Length: 143
Ligand SMILES: [Zn+2]
Image 1 (cartoon, rainbow, N blue to C red):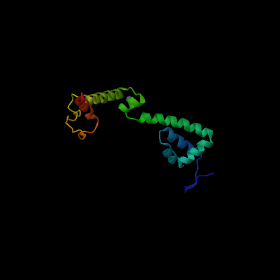
Image 2 (cartoon, helix red, strand yellow):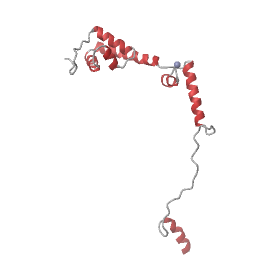
Image 3 (cartoon, rainbow, N blue to C red):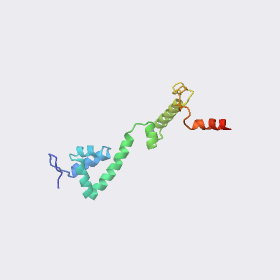
Image 4 (cartoon, rainbow, N blue to C red):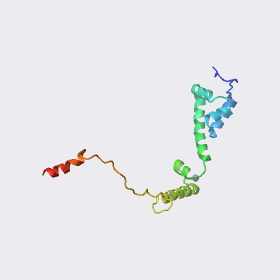
């Protein structure tokens, strides 16, 4: 069993697996991690599907990688909101961004978009003696 369509032989030995798992745990996307280990992402998936030990190791590495990616994020409003960071940096950034948004939505602030000016528009007129609007007039004349 070997992947076709690639010009190089696949060696996914212990060293390459270790390199792959280390890369995944460091937060690299799976495709990049596979490239680092000299294999295709498809091959890594196939090994994971047939080798329970590798599958488990990769699941753990993916979990660590996800955490690593969060750790690599800057401390800002995004991290405050999406990752629950309550450090001073994130809290300040979130507070300032919220305040800025409130000011922007405040109608008294000059930066707010003014409502469009009111204007008289011409409604389509029904020709005389047509349409329901003539009915009350006719009734009034009859009485
Ligand atoms: Zn933070």
